[in-house]
Image (cartoon, rainbow, N blue to C red; front, side, top):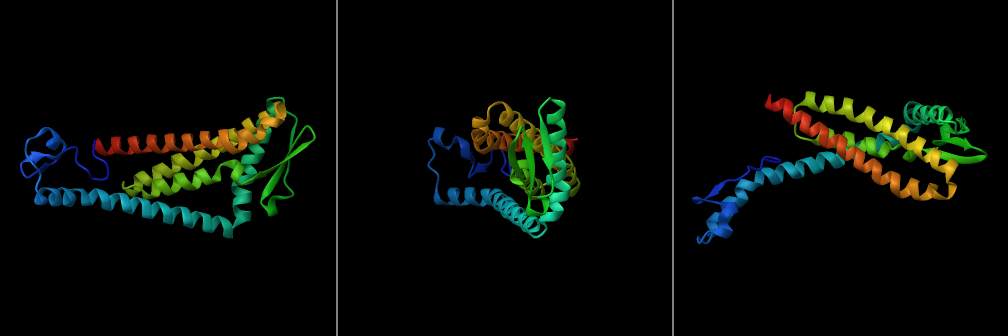
Amino acid sequence: MALFGIPDSFKVAGFHIRDVQNSEATPTLDDVTYAIEMMSPSIHGALRFCGLFIVGIAAQITIHESSPMFFGVFHLLPVSWLATRILVLLGVQAELVTRHLAQGFCRLDLSGVHYAVTHECTGIIAVFILAAAVMAYPVALRERARGLLLAIPAVTLFGVLRLVILGIVAQARPLWIEVFHVYIMELVTIAFAMFVFIYWVEEAHGRDRH
């Protein structure tokens, strides 16, 4: 399968590059130069993706830092509130205190233990990373729009699930909360974001083929 414009195989001076090791022919300098020229579109595509991805991440972080209350009201608060409602339905004694929202966090009270729920706890960094990757990927604009409509709600809802899991762990095994919060749930969040991105890429290319 071709990626970033790399063909599955291509000929250089009358033989396939991937068959060079099995051939008695010795590549010349012209062969190598031609191979590099054939690969340059793929290198350009990869560099373009990386550049746009970094710009996208930087732009979103800048907007987030300059508008903390906006993200508090429209992301941190709804994610924390929904997670708290689910915890209560599951029988966990949970209460959300929102008076610290202007300071960038909500307080989740679990059986007398207080936890500060920040933006990082809701997985918003994964939202930024996935959104930047979707916008940087070389597909049609409508496919990017579909990607954002898939990625942002999916990772946001996963952020709710993440808080629910952390709340259950904090209630049942308080000593495990640090390991789950810092390591396990971070890895699971990254894996989920990668799954969503790969799924969207496959769907986008599938629609292009049809």
